[in-house]
Length: 107
Length: 124
Image (cartoon, rainbow over all chains, first blue to last red; front, side, top):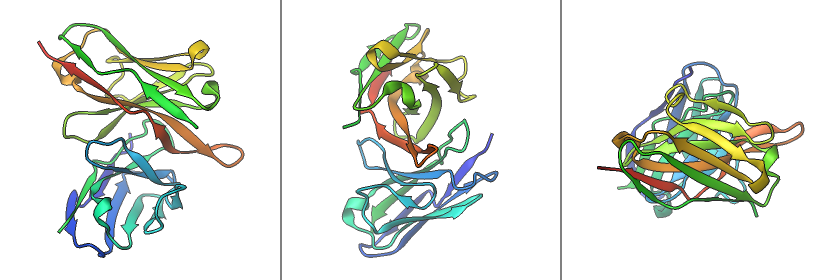
């Protein structure tokens, strides 16, 4: 099965900083990659699907890129409400594995 | 509005059986895959399996194959996750989520929306 890794596992940044999270698949998955945000105590919410398509209603400071095995999620200007854990997920074929998550907080 | 509403929290003893539910509304239940996701306390998301209610085609993660059973009842637009013999290590929040699609022909487009989660606590 394809394994998903993320880096870093956690990061601390200042409000207004540009933040980049990386997700890597052990084999190519084309662009079948989604990013989710989970705030503490809340249900996960999709931010990006098809590697780079912004889900309706998601702020434009979030963006995704990549194809094949390497993907990135970028927050162009970190806001206090972005404190959360971010997960990537492959969905080209089962199992639809999640990455281990990246915890983002404010410095 | 598409909604997935899960059954309430459960407290069970090791060895007991359990079936939790995910009732959907706002779309045709039989046209979309429904997945189940586990989140153990303080941990990440684990994909457990998925079912297509139209024909009950089901696929499990290797980690959960044989440990749980996923099913669906088309007549009441409800998906289920069940255990025959719970362990303490099954303590977690369990989420159902719809596999959304985009474009034509429909292509998968991530899990959205999600149910509110069901907390299962297994303790003697």
